[in-house]
Amino acid sequence: MRTSNDKKVIIIGGNLRNKGAWLMSDVVITKLTKELDVFFFTPFPEDVKVFKEYYSEYSIKDVIVWEPYNILLSFIKLPFKQFFNDPVSTAFKESQLVLDISGVVFIQKRGIKYLIYNSLITLIPYFYGLKIIKLPQSFGPITTSWYKIIARYVLRKCLIIFSRGPLSYKTLKEIGIDSVESTDITFLKETSNK
Image (cartoon, rainbow, N blue to C red; front, side, top):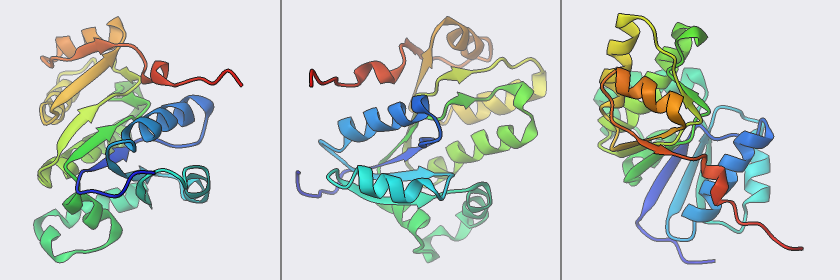
């Protein structure tokens, strides 16, 4: 195991709720912790114990529960962020980069609560001055003008966006967002012959 350093990244959107989500989380943890210290934000409190046990040998600074009410609280605290030293605020202050591996992003049919969620998990780190990389499984579809305006505003805050497949790429292009069309990050998973 390497020693801790000043390079820190926050992983948002990962969880252990299903095999696909766990595999995406596993790939980014095993790859990133070779060079960086990681804060892992999960919306599911029951994931914390498993993360700490399963990934104990990796450079994970902390596994932080970031449920919807915590996300909203983080947004409300933004104007006063310098006064807070809770785990969420500390992670944002110490990190340089956010990697968002959410499953699905800005899918209009999921409703307003997911629009708010997708917006806040991008805007909060942006207002802390962090660079944001998005690697979700899917974007869109987005059909109404107001939804497109909000999604475009939020996504322009990202350093780079990877769109998995032609439909996500097309959705982003239609709202004026450039992205890099890519495959699923789970293809980076190293396999064993054991």
